[in-house]
Length: 137
Image: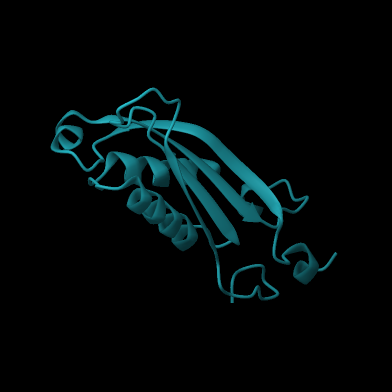
């Protein structure tokens, strides 16, 4: 198969699910002072090949570190903004990724009732076409 066919816009996925970090995000001052646990899911859409080489795919250890740095880094008041930041980081760093979906869960959000989870989901696609090299043109 030619490079052009193997690197067509992908519908394959790599999923990192349930990444847990401690961070200081939230609207209320107590959240910025005390911190909380955040859980992140990342779904990467790309064209996977049969090659058995890390150079031909996404290094999900690197993606994990991007998410970790975002969640444990500077404070965001809204998890919507945090999720958007993670999406932008992944698209900037991972050239083989055609689209990314990030869910940021805040299971201990300060809500006046019983609930299992609160999360936001942000999905973005790369707006470019693939060249013959497999890299974005």
